[in-house]
Image 1 (cartoon, one colour):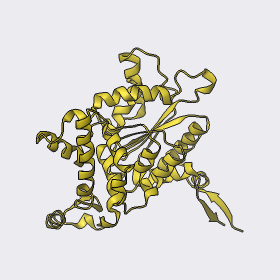
Image 2: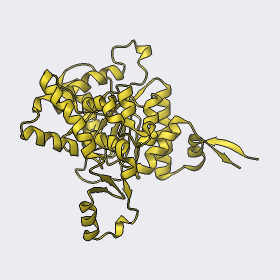
Image 3: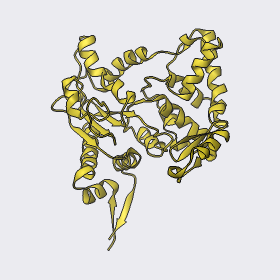
Amino acid sequence: MKKEISVLGLFQKLFHNFNARAMKDATLAFKKHLDDGGRMLLALGGALSSAQIGVTLAAMIRENKIHAISCTGANLEESVFRLVAHTKYKDYPNYRYFTKEDDQKILERGERRVTDTSIPEEDAFRVVEPIILQKWKEAGKTGLRFFPHEYFYQILLSPELEKYHEGNREHCWLLEAAKNNLPIVVPGWEDSTLGNIFAGYCKMGEVNPSVMKTGVEYMMYLYDKYQELSGNGLPAGKQGPGLGFFQIGGGISGDFPICVVPSIKYDLKKEVRPWGYFCQISDSTTSYGSYSGATPNEKITWDKLTKDTPMFVIESDATIVAPLIFEAILDRYTINEK
């Protein structure tokens, strides 16, 4: 006799030890954190947008399971590139066997390879560039200033870009974030294709650098958003477990936002609630001096986490683990089993 089992139920049935257990335990704690009234910040590193994390992440945003995002400039723009040029992407499953000459040919075709897929320059970068350039120039004329993600929100919510949509809109996590005006921080945005393009226009005098709010201003913005999302200031019975931290990969997208707690405490000298949950998915091995490979306990010494914070590390491939965790949290699929 067949019966249905949820993705979360499958976790509980199959995953008992090692990284599988870490994934299951982190997922159950993630779910409990939300069920108890907590909120979640996602730190998004790597090339997850090119890997189509939006298939599950957009739904997580839509279903109010993710409440803030810190991401690299590449993940920000590549969510849009997937939307406007999806059918022009090419897959290279045999990339491990490429020669330098093979990659030279990819360059000459105007493609930019990201592991086993490629971003088509003419259909992605050059489609988005003139539309967002217009927003930068308009801001310069009016004296207004915006964060990098706010310019992306503007073009995603305008009809100018809509005619170029090729991908499934429901799979574009940044479009979903724009619809919900989700708080986003993008530290080091300049380290991205459109960030480089912006710098070029500034150097040529076509755009004023002042129209772009800076990383320092992002931290100032995060001070307020963290206090709001963590429930600080609410009556004790209504605070819930605070804001959790779910990190994919390492680097600046994780390091920047987690610093907000000690910065509020020591630099602003204000009371602040600690992070209510922490999980990192990373295939970086624990090593000396590596932030990405540091164990969560090290963060206790920096007052980023506490000894009571639920902490999880899943040493695995985020392109496999993250969608599974998100599907388990969303609980939108069941599987028939005997």
